[in-house]
Length: 462
Image (cartoon, rainbow, N blue to C red; front, side):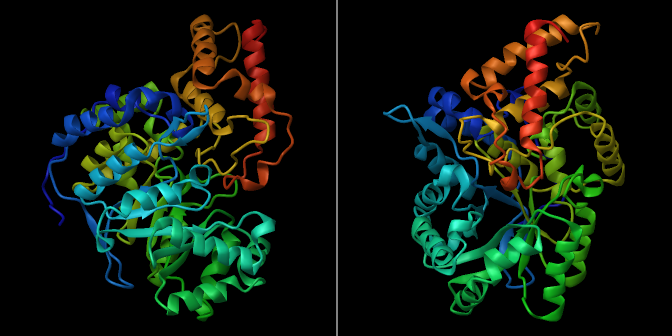
């Protein structure tokens, strides 16, 4: 049920930013936090949710889908008895229970998320609820050439059914496609797409779509297959946020174009990266103040989520919510969604244009580059560097007025955020991560650049 005139209460900026971070930062923090702390946080913030979840109806099949979707790519981790990492299942269960209690019914995962553990953890949590109370979305993530044959790809599909403890998948995706050669090798030449169409006809897949990371020409090609009737895509997952809407960089395509083309054809859209890898939740002081002046009680992140949920053909906006604070803030934003005014949309466009002037790395912390064979915490390094840029802690030279403070803030923060043995200095530029990056980042070059900057700071030679 959607209410029109409900005033939401949001987390204040200090409380929200205090808990920002992805799964790469979650291991140590969640050992201290634990399930009991998550329960206390949920109880403390539940009063901020003053309305009912906003839903969208899928015109293809009538599904009533929560506009806030749970992205299961950043489940909390903890140390196990051998000193390694494992998913904190107690916290996952509590977050899933809370999400469902407050109307979230769409959960998106993949065989490769969270070091390959996400589907199993998500399946355990969801299996405790009636099957008709949620929609599950997962993907054929056959990136590795060794598993792109028909039998290995089919095995991945069947493993998803087993790990998720379901006998059908509501929304199944061809994962992260962006060029014709990879698409042909992963899905056409091996015959697996024909198999998936058969599974859909048998009812074990209810809707078949794809997630897009690539160039405009390939996006148009996928739509041409739809136009010709060769493949009837039921939905598409696109990267949409108020920066990429009109200012996409690298191999990304403006989301305005992507969404408009889907809308013309009546293909529902799902949204990933509404926070642009967290960057739209931790703006610099000036940009934060601009948003706070307009909505003092609203979190910075809530602006990005409201933007992502604005288009009428968007079925759900995926958010990888590691912490209870993330979940509760997003529930407040979407319960219900308050549409942006023209003036607010103009403010976000101005924010996007200012952000383009800052030299951040376009990393979305998706972790597709992980694990690094040499132990580098690639998304952790980029995430810290981007936060330092936004906070003004990346001096240009020792002649900067605030050099000493910025230098100390960067070096101390870097060592706290990323373990020394996992920092950029240990990168050997092997390049194995590059083909896996959907943002087309030259990761080795960026690692060298950041490492050189860090060494200059350490030696005082900037």
